[in-house]
Amino acid sequence: MSAQVLSGKTMSESLRLEIASRVTALKERGLTPGLAVILVGNDPASEIYVRNKGNGCTEVGMYSRTINMPAETTQEELEAAIEELNADSAIHGILVQLPLPKHLDEQAALAKILPEKDVDGFHLINAGHMLTGTEGVVACTPRGALHMIKSTGVNLSGKEAVVIGRSNIVGKPMAMLLLKENCTVAMCHSRTQNLAEHTRRADILVAAVGKAGFVTADMVKPGAIVIDVGINRVDGKVKGDVDYDAVKEVAGWITPVPGGVGKMTITMLLMNTVEAAERMLK
Ligand SMILES: NC(=O)C1=CN([C@@H]2O[C@H](COP(=O)(O)OP(=O)(O)OC[C@H]3O[C@@H](n4cnc5c(N)ncnc54)[C@H](OP(=O)(O)O)[C@@H]3O)[C@@H](O)[C@H]2O)C=CC1
Ligand SMILES: Nc1nc(=O)c2c([nH]1)NC[C@@H]1CN(c3ccc(C(=O)N[C@@H](CCC(=O)O)C(=O)O)cc3)C=[N+]21
Ligand SMILES: [Mg+2]
Image 1 (tube, rainbow, N blue to C red):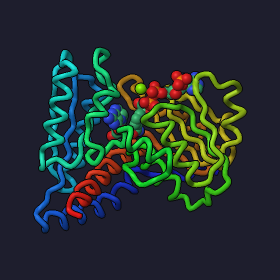
Image 2: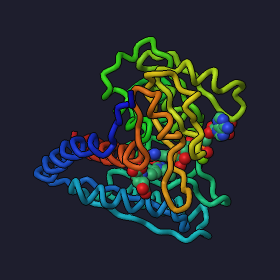
Image 3: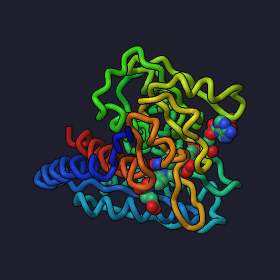
Image 4: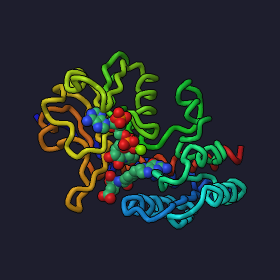
């Protein structure tokens, strides 16, 4: 038996129709939702992501702006660009593409974004909402991944969830969302001993490691929900963190790369932006 494929493309199509109709409703009230992306330097992977975001905005009728800044931009210049977008009434969502060049302070830059315009959910206020389970902006990748997990219809309460990776942008918020769904959650990382013993217990396994083909079939419990967050460039192709062909013979559900979590991340970014615009009309 081969796993059911959870298509981020198919799920995004219906979600983007819903987003587009909410954009239309806002436009009828005189407000066009706007998303601004700040890109410092020219990392090729970031440029693909920025392009996909721009196309997504066009697809749902949103306004999109990309601010390209040179690699040698100073902290003061970056923060001034953020402040300008905070004050701009055409902009409802601000995203600072990470990672920033090494000389820049990421946390200080994120702290400058108005929490209401922080559509990434990376500001400390939104990170705090995530930790306390109160209402705030939920980070796009974990939000998209949870949507895919829920689409299986499996009752998550009491299930074993294992997240590999503990970054602030993926692993940690993903673990918090699964905890909120009453999963028993383990967060694994590079210091974890006997990783496969943890992953083999997982009813829900999320891989956010950044290593192509890292999760092999022997690490997966038969019938598990396997969510592949990884985006790795291998010989010019995009590959996930999961050894897809082998794992799909063991898992119950699996997400492809591309066309999986990455697609949903963009969709949830559009969702967070339309929600930010709606809050401004309330
Ligand atoms: N699909 C999407 O929308 C998105 C995809 N990504 C992709 O997801 C992946 C992860 O991204 P991100 O969280 O930012 O990456 P980071 O590099 O910030 O984090 C990687 C995590 O993996 C852990 N790790 C590394 N090696 C091992 C190992 N051998 N065993 C167990 N754990 C290990 C690290 O542990 P430690 O903390 O101990 O160092 C760390 O917690 C990347 O491929 C990235 O491109 C990222 C964002 C969005
Ligand atoms: N402030 C900030 N927020 C982020 O959310 C953020 C970030 N910085 N830095 C980089 C990572 C990476 N990330 C991706 C999102 C979507 C795709 C994506 O669109 N993937 C498609 C296309 C992949 C392809 O090019 O083929 C897919 O998987 O189908 C990829 C990668 C967001 N991140
Ligand atoms: Mg990182």
